[in-house]
Amino acid sequence: MNVPFVDLHRQYLRYKDELDAAMARVIAETAFISGTYAQKFEEEFAAWLGVEQVIGCANGTDALEIMLDALGVGPGDEVLVPAMTWISTAEAVGTRGAKAVFIDIDDTATMDPNLIEPAITERTKGIIPVHLYGCPADMPRIMDIAKRRGLFVLEDCAQSHGATIDGKKVGTWGHTATFSFYPGKNLGAYGDAGGMATNDAALAEKARMIANHGQPKKHTHLIEGRNSRLDGLQAAILSVKLPHLDSWNDQRKALAHLYDQNLKESVFELLERPSNRDCVHHLYVIQYSNRDHLSEFLSHNGVHTAVHYPNALPQMPCYESATAPTDVYSKSLRISHKCLSLPMFPELTEEEVYSVIDSLKKFELQKLRAK
Ligand SMILES: Cc1ncc(COP(=O)(O)O)c(C=O)c1O
Image (cartoon, rainbow, N blue to C red; front, side, top):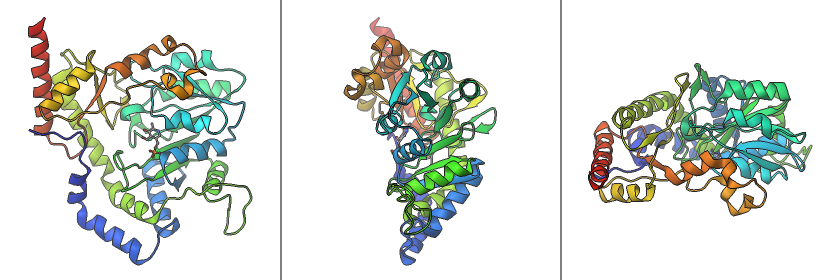
């Protein structure tokens, strides 16, 4: 059996009529940039998330950059980010002229809260926890530290739409949160799209202004901003998809449970998942020492996999000279060498998951026999 890593076409076929009709409406009304559909989606997403304001923008990287600008981050400032994440989290800090200070992860693959306080200096302005792979960071502890030390918390929710901690959604713990609606995300558009969320009205107003050329109203530019708006087609697509997000996340959780049950006593390592943190499994990641050999074997057996990510950020040429020796980031390095993302998307069938598990068991047996 051929098992794709992700197949977005299956979802499109299932909701084709609704999606095609929504796109046709936007085109017929020429509601391409911002406007009715963008506003509608912002309101719907805010209601779903449980925050007062959502501001749409062009992508998740812009969302981070705009929000950091709105928070006043600039040259001389430091912001704490996990050493294992997609580069956007750190890049948004660096491109503000500030310094991304890397914090190693713990066994949940999210920022280790024990390492935050020792990294705080008089320059530290805030913390960006990332709910990597759809699994929440330890927000109660991070918020406690931030409150005591007077730091902002911006949650990077690009991979975690709908994940919760003690029943409270990620994106509602910090002062603000950013989302990506890149096509493959748990809630994905059909192109680039992003959003920012907050209950802070002044921060929301500033972010909205920055994303739209610094104008609170047409032709009045209070500051120099940028062009980063949510376009109508993407917003209309997201509005069709949002009502299904919770059931898609449930489906991801059910598939992850199958993987968990069948792999928990195997040569493959699973990530730690504290019981009060509900993961929405944007990715299902296992760890194995000879990851490349395993992925090759799976590929020969028709199972497509990916690696998120093969390098920890402090190893990247753009950060190498500015960061501490790599042994400081030992858990991030370890996962970067061993991680392998298995097929995971809501339309993946149980039969396909069992086929992946069978291939993994076959690999394991070969290894045990070779010993
Ligand atoms: C953790 C994280 N942050 C930020 C982003 C940036 O989102 P976008 O690709 O929409 O710019 C991504 C996208 O993959 C991500 O995974």
